[in-house]
Length: 436
Image (tube, rainbow, N blue to C red):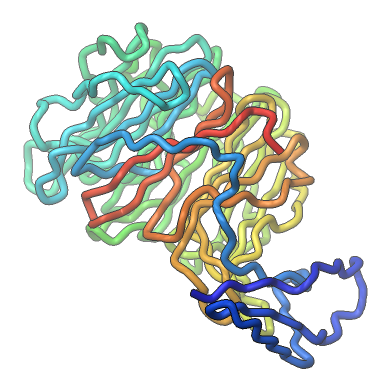
């Protein structure tokens, strides 16, 4: 086993000369110390000089427990994990046959240590559902959506159900996608005090639609066309998915998605509850193909997290998580510092929960290549500008985050170990709310 010690960190002031620097790494191989010196090496990214090469570290002991849900074989999607500050909910797709499965919801009232029996909400209960979403409205109502196999070959329809009793019972499923939509990519909810939206991409045409919902989950008017994309964000079928994300602040709704052509972030705003949209252009930022942008709001500030491919780096092009924040509902953005310093970054999620911004992502440490398989990492911020040192949550493996929530139970982070395409091991890791 090889254990690496990274060089001592030193910060390069903004605007300072980015001269090459001698790096000194130490490896311990079977108890023997080996000194490796690489002279005149500059590790440069798009807009910063990274002075710290992150090598494998141990799981942060602040993560005091990890609970295996014992679910499987099943899979899920980033974001299908929700918290209201008191309970946790997770939505999975189980009994998968081909592209289809059954959508199941579970609840935990103790931070993820124990879970209720799964409730199958897809209709019919057999393997007829594909991509799905789960969200909690401010008053505590649960909303779930999924793409159901349509009556004609290669067609799907988007269905919605809601629960007003914490998942114990569910309303009758209602269809919210218009008949002309053939395939439905991953849906996303935005639930506020006075409005409810669901957005999705037509997986055949690339059109991105926003549908207002009545309180019972049924369509409220006709859908609004937001934009178009030609991106494929997953490889289990030839689906187009714009990676849509939604958030609200200052009475405005912000939408972020992956535009057509070379992947670029696009943003649009609505000041009438999602009935109409105005393009805010693109954040001057390319986007790592195959990843999804994420939005979160505390009611005043909206934070956008995405993976920068680092194409302008002259040496090692290591993607990293970029965070922006907007204080005016999307009219302008402030670009914050990059949060990660890894060789490669996978799924990313950001939430406002428990009085702080919480960022989770998958990534592998290393320099020219990954030193280990991916781990799940966690960082926290009070102002979305200054972030904690990333904390290692998992051992290396085929792991991916599903979401994070904080409340009376502390901090609970859901992640999965991918044993095969549709056979995931679901785990909840926990730490104290005020752990450093």
